[in-house]
Image (cartoon, rainbow, N blue to C red; front, side, top):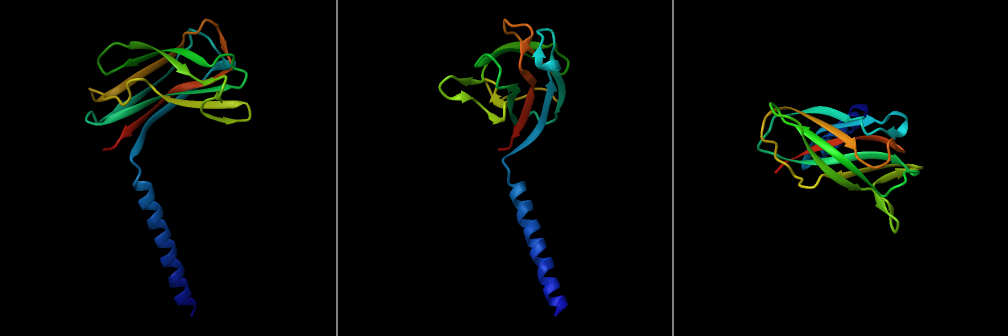
Length: 165
C-alpha cells in the first residue's frame, strides 16, 4: 500500500512541476538587462553618472527600454529631468533629454511604494527600440535638474526587456 500512495505523490509532484514550467515558459518577454546604481548619500550630483553596459545579440527583435528610479517620499518635485546617453558598438555616446514624471498632486506618486520609498519604471519615449548592431552597448544617466545635488534620489538605472513576437 505504501508504494501505491508513494507513486501517486511522485506523479502529483511531477505534474505540478510540469504545470509551473509551462506557465513560466509561456511569458511573452524575457529580461535582457537591468542595472540600477545607488546614488551616494541620496544626493545626486550633476556630475555623477548612473552607468552600465549590456550586450545585444538579437538585432531582429524589438526591446522596451525603461528608466528605473527609486526616491523617497521627501523628494520635492513631481518629475525629474535626465540626460540619457547611449553608445552603440563602434560609435560615440549620444544623449537625449527626458522629462520623467514621478507623480501628481492629485494622484500622488507613480510606481510602487513601501513606507516612504518609491520605485517607478517608465518606458523611454520611442519604445520599443530596435538595436542595429550586435555587441556591447553602454549607457549613462545624469540628472539635469536645477538643484545640485538633487536630494532624496536613492538609485537610477535602465531595464531592457526583449519583446518576443
